[in-house]
Amino acid sequence: MKRLPNLTSLRFILASLVVLFHTFQFSKNRGFTSYDNFSIFDKGEEAVFMFFSLSGFLIIRQLYVEKLIFNSINLQHFFLRRILRIFPLYYLILIFGLLYYRVILSWFGFNFQNNYDLLHGVFLSATFFSNIFASYKPGGIIEILWSIAIEEQFYLLIAPLIFVLPLKNIVRSLLFFTVLYFWLYFSGFVDFLKSYKMLFFYFSFSGMCSVLLFNEKIRIQKIRYFIFITLAVYFTTSIFKDNLSNWAYHFFSMVLFGLTICQLVEKPILILESKVLNHLGKISYGIYMYHAIMMQIVGLVFLKFNFHLKISSFCSIIIFNFLVFTFTVLTANLSYRYFESYFLNLKKKLRK
Image 1 (cartoon, rainbow, N blue to C red):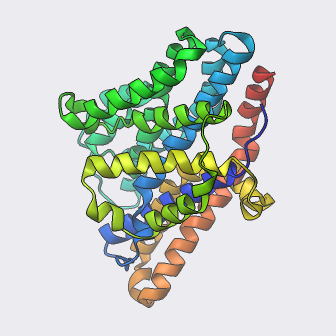
Image 2: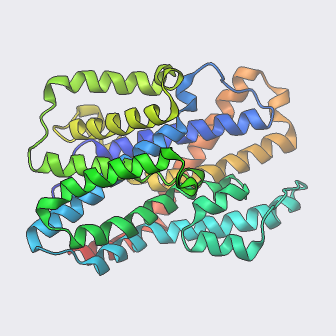
């Protein structure tokens, strides 16, 4: 399937927003100097929501095209490809996180309160219910796995659904699912959906947009720049969040992300198609997964030697964030090249 422009770089931009958000939260919680007055440093959750939209757009489009060409979907190959892409790094981070909070921290003289049964936590995480495990506050390295779990839960549901649906009913079914699920999520009738952040409507709405765009049934080029400007305002200010109710903010976000992705794939944007950004986009899964570890390591050094007390506030902010981001990118790059690439090559062979 033809590569869609701009989206690889978008992954890196969204991952960077998550890193900024978590370093901001980490700094604030540990008394480091932080930057409370800049909205862009507080958009990590929104970046994850847009990740959901991007994932739904790409995966549902892939499933739709496969069914269009072959009149069926090879579910076994689909889930094997997901396993090869997601599982190796997911379980590596999970194992390290469990060891870090139960063993490594104590070696350095830091106590961490584990408020959960180990076997129960391992079971929830290993079976991709990390969004439930995150409610026990097992530590940031483990807690970030919640979003990966949400993705896999959605695809376990949606891939078989698209498999059995006639092509002509896919858009209507995705629209029906989005509307019904959105209502259930915010109605309070099914409390666990919101409690465990099962935000499936982001995936399904963007997936519906991808099918409509593929069949040339979306025409929004006339408002292209309006959409991009709105997205820029969304991520750099708190205007929408401050003036919309919770459900309205999510609805607005869902629609904005879906329409933005539709516009991004229409034609290449020079800066987003640069080799550097595309490479960083390729390793964005690693950036997301490793950044909490790098943040903990740099934070431990700062706390152990009181660096944040020995230098100016401005220097503390710059150095802490620079070190976290640099070590994260370097680690993600090494991981992609020497660890993930083995499984990605298997995935490519499977696709062929």
